[in-house]
Image (cartoon, rainbow, N blue to C red; front, side, top):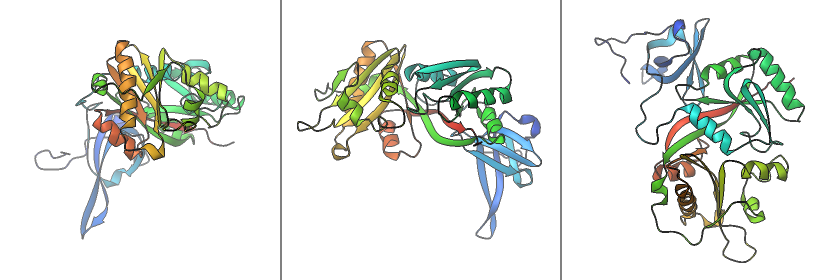
Length: 336
């Protein structure tokens, strides 16, 4: 990270740069008798009372005393992507929402309120794609009431790490006591390489999930009715389900997966392998057969969502050519 201008470190940011992407270096203590520094890159979301807040790409906020700054500058709004399909955050957010549709929705200006009996955060949270009706405070009050009427917590899904993402909204929610939870990465890659292998007869495709598939899906027994889960899982423009049967009659599936095709995009989800069948290449085989079906429908790009601490999944997706595109997390309304 380069801060020097004529051999000197300089702070070239201030309160007027709130909302811009910045790179800062701050003094964070001492190491081996000398000063220790930390570099932070993200969106400057506030600068108040001598303290600035920077939201990193993954959605984590960092508070830094202005007196600890030793260097800082504004950097391009979004880093150049080295690989993967070209797409802005708004396009991918909308595609992902269509591919995981909620049972019930309501509009609040540029916000969409989604509810599905508690089955997954994506189908039970606000999707903010513009300004809410009535201003932020009124919209939040209406949001809390709407979810309370359905026996659900009020959650807002906020994206980070893109040129048109929600860092400023996340900061406003944090100031109002809405806490962050359930961080995720959205990754993209080319679709064709996923299917570049011989067809695997072990993988069976279907348009609807059967009971075995649902039994193997670890989120299938989460809060919410089975009907809501089926409606969400089966929703989307064109949905495929993959299953690798167990070795013996009565065994559950050895592996499962889901793919939804929407124009050029194929969205992968629910790729899971039974603990006793891991390291056999079943996840790769499932994704390959789903990719083959998506290619036949004209898709060319792939996306998926993964928790940032799921190291096994991240390693698999790295090998398959996926790269980070943006991140998102949820903001939960304060109690009371």
